[in-house]
Image (cartoon, rainbow, N blue to C red; front, side, top):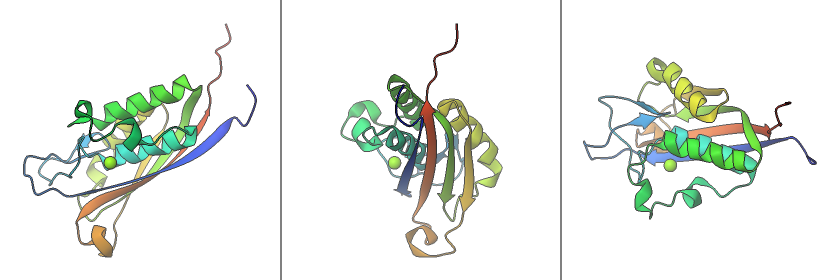
Length: 166
Ligand code: MG
């Protein structure tokens, strides 16, 4: 295979908190019970979405909004970790696999620390490569600082899949 064997991609996502008490908060595939949910067509998992966009961007594929349009009823209430698995399959079809993904989640609430290991486990299982998650407060600044939503940045490294020797 010719060309560079590695590529990087960046993903960003932000979702606003919902007034709907029926919305569940899901971040990195983990439900934060008792916390207000986020507005979105799917489960609004901003962390899984940022990871998916980083991987798609690295591969040069259309972004998550084009892959899973919010006008498509198939994705209503979708489990975003399943969307992420689908993205990994799209990469594989192009001959790429993830090397690792690193995420920064920016929010005043919820506290991520109690669920961080489980988020990393679920994302790592979906991506098939190490996914790390860090939490950052917005120090009261801007919309995130006013506890209006949750944002996430992700950076992904992908590499060309190698044929297993037979
Ligand atoms: Mg999103």
